[in-house]
Image 1 (cartoon, helix red, strand yellow):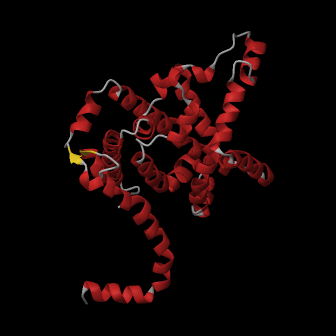
Image 2 (image 1 turned 30 degrees about the vertical axis):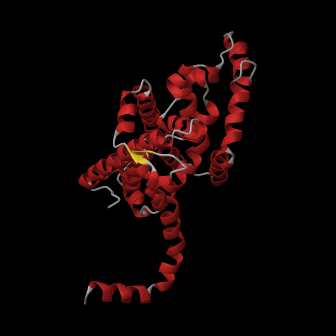
Image 3 (image 1 turned 120 degrees about the horizontal axis):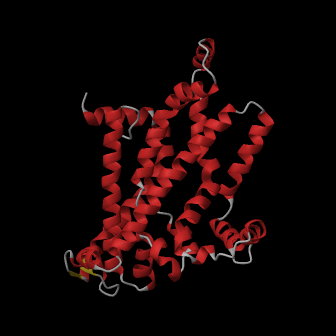
Length: 304
C-alpha cells in the first residue's frame, strides 16, 4: 500500500480529528510560518515604499553592524543571565511546589494553597508590575517594613540596576509558580499507588518515597518541559521588561527583544531589527536541538 493510499485512508477514517486540528494548523501557518517571508528584510535595506521586492540587497551588513555595536555584548549578556536565572530558580519552583502539595493530606488546606498560588497567574501583567511599583517605591510597604524593623534607608528598587534581575525572576516565580505546578501534579497523579504501598512495607519514609518514586515518576515530564524551556531560552519576557525597566536600569535589564523593539518600532530601523531578531531565533533553534539531543541520549523524554 503506497503512502498516498494510506494517507487517504487515514484521512477518511479520522476526518473529524483532522477537522479539529485544522484551526491550529491555520493559526501556525498564518501567524508563524507566513511572517517568515518577511525575514528577507534582514538582508536588505528595507523601505516600506519600495516593499520586499524593491528594496536593495545588502547581504550580512546588518548582522555585522550588530556584532560590532557597543550594545551587542551587553544585551547578549543580560539575555543569557536573565534566562539562566529563570532556569535555575523559576523552573524548579513549580516542581518543588508540586512535590510539597502532593505530601499534604488535608484536602481543604491543599485546595486553599493551590488557589492562593494559582490566582496571581490570572492577574494582568500590567497590574502585577503596578503592584511592584507601589510596594517597592521609596515610600512603599517594603521600604516602610525595612525601615521599621531594621532601620534601613529607603531603596528605590526599580530604579537600581542591581535589583532588576532579582525582582524580575522573583515576581515571575510569585506570579506563575502555582500555574507551572499543575502539569507536575497531573504527572504525579498518574504514578501507580502500589509503588508507594510497597515502599511503605519496606520501611521507606515520605522523603525516600518522594525521591525514589515521585520524582523519578515525573522525570520524563520534567525533561520534556525542560527541553521546551531551553528552546525559548533566548526569549525573555519582553512585555514585563518593557513595563519594569527604564534608562537607569538598561545596564542589567536591556535584552535582545527590548533592543529589537526600540530599533524596529521606535526608530523604524526595520532591517537592522529583523537581523537582530533572526540572530536570536537561530540561537534558540540551536539550543532546542541540542537540548532535545541530550534528552534523547538520557532516554527520559524527548520531543522527537
